Length: 453
Ligand SMILES: *Cc1c(COP(=O)(O)O)cnc(C)c1O
Image 1 (cartoon, helix red, strand yellow):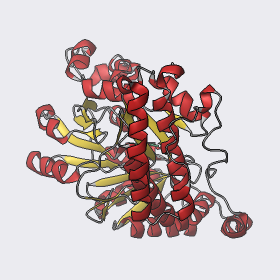
Image 2 (cartoon, protein in one colour):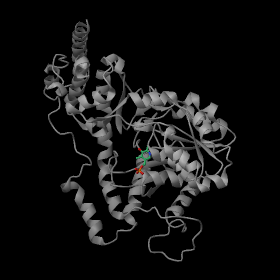
Image 3 (cartoon, helix red, strand yellow):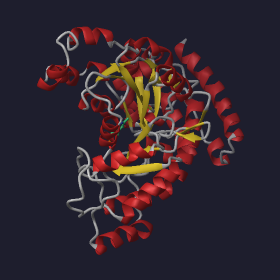
């Protein structure tokens, strides 16, 4: 029965693919290839892997075009922040469509500094998603505020905007909106809620370079937008980050904060400049900015390519039973696709565990992983609540961890964390044929799920 169902499906699929291939203008060679041959053995069972080549390596570095700028900086001996960092900031602001940009050492500190300079701290609550990288939540605790978790919409992988208002209290100061996976959150609804309740919006766009809603770039909707340029990110410079905003006063303060608290515009080497506020040091170097300028030149083309490949891959795999790719909100004009994610329902795969499914994908030459664990359930929260500092500013009732944990349950996120499968962004820099091969592999695994267990 099962086998029959599969081969019928395979047949329908094959025809659907041919139709798609024609519509998308996919080369004849791809159309003619033996796609969705469900009889092929998965690589984990001894078949040939569908991907026999290496994926584009990351980060990309081409000596011919990329090294001149870096060498100029190195040979000049001017390594601490100066003209090249200024140029990078101007270009990043222009690229994102923000009035101002400040480059900082990493995305984590972009978030920390933004919250600090928006004066979010002790006694405040900040709403955040549990489906994200640790820095989104730790930046809230770092400033002495309490993260309040709002459950996700599993279809979009983002914070569910319909569940925000029930979490707002008299202490809520801000919403940390994380555009996780590089997919835009539902900013229109979130901005309406923020306006109604007079809340600050900080966008964690650390995975969302060049992503857009109605052609407006993410990071420009809230009071501040934060980016990461860490090595694995779509815009890599080793380590690096940025804050963007249209608010001059806020950006002047961020500048001071990132430069010992010295006045806005003071440069490296300026001593006794009349320190105006409490600051720290978050400056990036000239050579990091030189690397960033080079990477920025290819970001647009890569983003375009990731969007095309993701749309193609999504359209082919979403018909496989048990595979549910992310859904984009209607007003999204572009995503960044730091990750290509789908939910895996093992019930449709003869109860083949997700880890085994991922193992089977890897055997096919497809880099896959299972992604985040629930961020609302990790020990750092209780650890912060038990710290001397939190005890100085909060009552024992407020730091009752059992009560906090009970109020911050996110059952849909728990489920999502058990179902998600990620493909890394460099996979989306592959060819159309590669996307077909990934779909092929998933179909093979589906057809042989019982044997793979
Ligand atoms: C990478 C990342 C950060 C932190 O950026 P770093 O540059 O690594 O400090 C914050 N939030 C999200 C969602 C990220 O993916």
